[in-house]
Structure formats: C-alpha cells, structure tokens
Image 1 (tube, protein in one colour):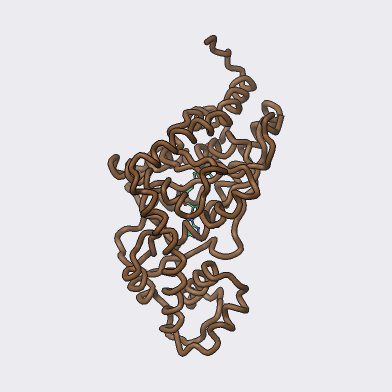
Image 2 (cartoon, rainbow, N blue to C red):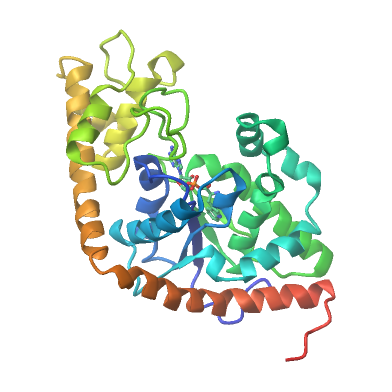
Amino acid sequence: MSDNGSKQHKRVFSGVQPSGNLTIGNYLGALKQWAREQHNFESFFCVVDLHAITVPYDPADLRAKTREVAALYLACGIDPDISTVFVQSHVRAHSELTWLLNGITPLGWLNRMTQFKDKAAKQQADSVSTGLLDYPVLMAADILLYQTDAVPVGDDQRQHLELTRDVAQRFNHMFGETFTIPAAMIPPSGARIKGLDDPTAKMSKSITDSEYHAVYLLDPPNRIKKKIMRAVTDSGREIAFSDDPERAGVNNLLEIFQAFQGGTKEEVEAHFANARGYGDLKKEVVEVVTEGLKPIQQKYAELTTDAGYIDNLLADHAARAAEVANPTLELVQERMGFLKARR
Ligand code: TYM
C-alpha cells in the first residue's frame, strides 16, 4: 500500500521552524508557493516546533514564536478552510515515527548532511545535541506520515528531501510498500535568497547578530528601507543577473525583485536598463518588498486581535492532521512487527 486508503488528492506537506523571525527568504522559498499550491493539492502546513529544540533556545520564545508562525501562515494566504495548519508536537505520531525510522536509518547518512555539519561547526563540539544529528529523520517522519507527494521548500532543503526519499525506499524495501515517495518542489525564483549583509551566505532567520542581514515579514516600512538601502553590492554599475560571486549582492537584489514582482530575468533586466546605478535598483526593491509585505502585515494584525482564534484553530487542525497521520503510524507498527496494543 503506497497510498493511504482515503487519499483522494495528491498531498503537499511542508513546515517552518518557529526559531526566529520569518524572513522574505522563508516567504519566497516556501510560504508563497504554499499559498498557490493549496489549490492544487490536499495540503498540510506544520509549525515544526520539535525541530526548533535541536539548537539552544528559550522556552518562552518557542511558545510565542509557535503562535506567531501559525498566524503568519494564514497571513501569507494559507486558507484554513482548505488547508490543515497545525503544530508538530500536537500530533504525537511525529515523534513516534521518528523513533521507528531511527531503527532503519544508517548513521552514515546523517553524518553526511551539510546542514548538520554547518550547524554543528557553529557550536562547541560537546554541546551539539543528538537531536541536531537526528533532525532529518524527524523531517522524514513529518513528510512520510501524510503519504506526501510533493514538498514545497527552498533550495537548502534539497538534501533533506533526498534523505527522506532514501529512508522511504529503504523502509518499503525492508517491510513492503508502505510510504509514498515524495518529491521536492522548488520555485524557479526566490529559492535561494542571500543575506543582505553577506550575499555569499543564505538569508537566515536564526542570524541575529547583524541588524542588516534579513528583511523580516513583520518589519515596518522604515526598517525594510534601511536594511535594503544598506545591502552589500560591488563597485560596478551594471544591473544584471550574474553567477559571479563578486556580483552576488546585485544578483540577490534582482532575485528578490523578480520573486516579488514576477516576470522573466530578461524583463527584469530590461526594466532596469535606464537605471542610474545601484541606488535606483535598491529603491525599487524597497518598494516591491514593502508593497508585497503590506497585505501580509495587515492580515497578521487582524488575525492576532483575537487571542483565542489561532489556538482554537490549531486544536481543530491537529485533530484533522492526526486522522491522517495515525493510520500511517499504525501501518508502520504492524509492518515492523510490533504487537498491537489491546485497547
Ligand atoms: P526553515 O525553518 O529553515 O525554513 C522554512 C522554509 O523556508 C525556506 N528558506 C528559504 N528559501 C529561500 N531562501 C532562503 N534564504 C531561505 N531560508 C529558508 C526553507 O527551504 C524552508 O522551505 N527543515 C525545515 C523545516 C521542516 C520541513 C519539514 C520542511 C521540518 N520538517 C517537512 C518541509 C517538510 C527547515 O528548517 O526550514
């Protein structure tokens, strides 16, 4: 059974960690596609709080950010009448399937993950948690529980998706067809937004030591302007897309412009053909980003006036998610040879 019996439409699953302020990278790489694809797939959008405890964190922040991220999903256009929006830790099957998949995931596969190596390198060796290494198995459990067909994510999640597919195939091979093999869905533009202060590094919500690194979805217009006007560029004048690392700053600004505004690369370059320099480019990027975030910020403000709304919705939707996840977990338990608990 590679399909859950009750599956009528192809499924999408994706998530964001509530580990900082969501950035325009998260929006362009993930959330913007989710809002579009929810009309084509049965969709599950999860706030992945269990992932957020794999690096040092503050418990009060985690709770606050979990609500904030859920509200931002809706503010970015996720419609709770057609998509399921829930918190990972509210559906116990995520933790449980992780343990079961740990039993069949070779350690060598996890040691090769570049995100693990990067994140581990930033910490003292003796404070790197086991959870950080095991992170991709939890992510595989998230995806596989819903018999997911497609996973809309930014480019940095490509390797984790490959691992998910490998784990699913290994399980199916060892215990019989059980899981749908999911595919990554990566947008053609906006999948790799770079830091404004360092255009060679990924824009990340967890970098907090530089004020000018990222535009956050809830930044007011004056902060958006300040951050973009200070973005690192180069000493040239030509406004064109480029793979040259020396010109990564301008390329990144053009990517951001294109992802918000739409159009082809050629159209974007033509738009700036008469610009007088990078100052003009930056001003236009400020404008499209500010305009693009305005409706999200308005919706967020409306949604959060009623303190109970998000919590109630999360409770309802966790129950909906569990109805899909639990049968998969039970099937896995049976296939792996666990004695069924008598209830
Ligand atoms: P996270 O929280 O780091 O990022 C959430 C989503 O945003 C995308 N993203 C970006 N896209 C473009 N440019 C950027 N600079 C940028 N930064 C982040 C990410 O690719 C991601 O799609 N492991 C995941 C969360 C996760 C998950 C899952 C995702 C847990 N379980 C199951 C999909 C399916 C993560 O850390 O995302």
